[in-house]
Image (cartoon, rainbow, N blue to C red; front, side):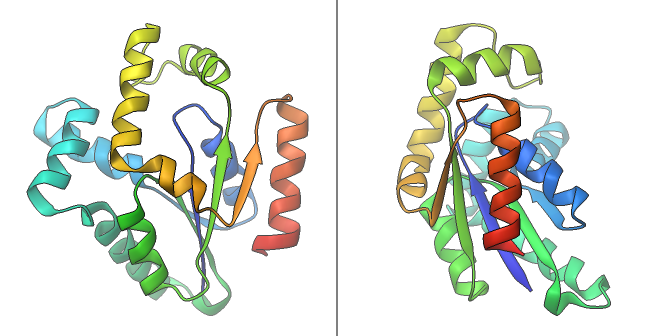
Length: 182
């Protein structure tokens, strides 16, 4: 089984990588969805929940949940050896460390977009945890940076710059799957 991690600040373009991965019959696990699910249970803010989960259960909590989910999903597959799992939303070196310990050929890919580009995308996306105020956008970025996402991006095996339009970005993702992942 191949496991690929995707990292990047909010609005960088991680979800399009996941969408293309699904079209190629890969299995996608979104770490943010795990946090959103827990936030709903707790009836709390997603950002607050992300922080509290790490305080309560340690920095490895989301990686542990993700690894457990991958292992459970691989048991359901006929040919898990050739399966590709894509983990969207890696935010800390703790998570990277656990994935590398559990999956020998783990590849880490990061998506980069400028703050102004990402802010515009988030305003249009209108997900519950997105803000239309630039100050709140910057606070969210800072929270992500406090988790260690900057170090994750810096230690990536591959970085895709997503600044030059959707068609070019899609081509970069397709090239990534054709030449690196599959």
